[in-house]
Length: 501
Ligand code: HEM
Image (cartoon, rainbow, N blue to C red; front, side, top):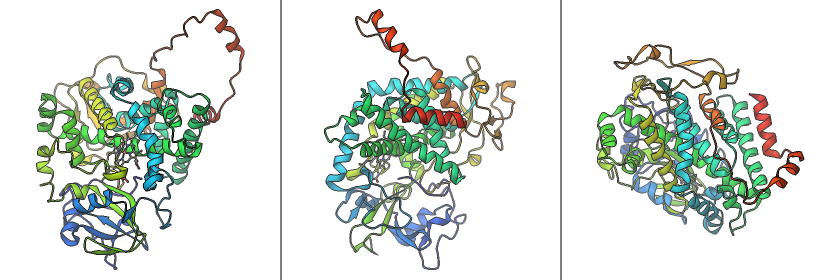
């Protein structure tokens, strides 16, 4: 669902002069060339939507206005989520809830909605806390951290994995898969894709055999009776839709707190509630700024343009959020806090079914980071932060911070596999905050795959032990010990993954 090219792009963050000339000879915006998009200029020149080229020779439309984005999100008569009838080149074919309309969509969506509803606050918060406390504990004694690679990125993988009902080591695998899916090496990205597929097929197979009171178990037990393939796709969709945007909502929120003292003070002082703050970030720094996923169901005229049947439409969420009809722009964003009419969760039939879930994860993650990493400041100038090279995902590659070190130094190096690759140094370091000592002087080096490394040690964290069944006596102890477990596809996936690291 979420893919593209190009770094951050608040209205005005890239000046009109800096933005490249984005047009091809035919007048369509060549999205495949990447780069910043000058939203305001595009809106002024084109109004509610602009013709684009997704790939050379593949036409489409980018929705710019708030009204136009909302209309297409809500409408299932003129705009379809199903790419299959059109077979448009360059568009991924999906046969899951997100790629279907009508009854077919509802049949696949309902089990996801119902399973997520079981992960309510009481169940979810302890899971998030455990993963967050562990990840923060790993850096607490260091006095510095990359809060994306070491925190915001592995956290949703660990949380979702636990909710799927698998042991923590699979959460490490999932965090690693997510990180490698961004690899510029096509072989690495393809192998991550294969592992993700194996994980979800294996998860379904195991949960059919050993049903549990977890998200996967509830999904499989749903009366809509999904097939194994449908269930694996549904769980993969939850993962794919949930992981990356949650990571970047946490990362973008932490950055907003760190770079804006007024927001920081309002947040810590309680005048800006966590819920309102998350909405504020959803307006100003939405983790998804461009989103694919609709096709015109017929030839039609829309917002002054003639759109042919089957042409893909992309949602320009970042543009919608800075449309003067709903927002005066970033400067007025604080006054938008608490205003939930942003489009970051989508709208209509496909609206994100995990809004409450995501808010809870993000709120808990922010609270714990702010609470545990006292005196947190950015370790580089904001202009030197590196952003994901994506038109679609708006999120940081890394968020280097300093804070007051506490506690024991974690055994990070011992836990790291030997092939971590060259250490990375953050560029143009900020001056050290006053009062911090020699421990801050070492170069801010981090392994290229720190996220997975950070996730790695969760397996070592103490887990609540299951109580023995009531009345279980000595007869339970002997026979099981002699049985040799037959490895299932998930066991094999984990063993392969371990052996390659
Ligand atoms: C900050 C975090 C998140 C954001 C910004 C976000 C955003 C969205 C958006 C915009 C859509 C609608 C897509 C469309 O209309 O084409 C969507 C759908 C979806 N999201 Fe989220 N999401 C987030 C987190 C999550 C999480 C944590 C989960 C699961 C645990 C999740 C599961 C889904 C699913 C399954 C759909 C498809 C629903 C359908 O097609 O009926 N999302 N999300």
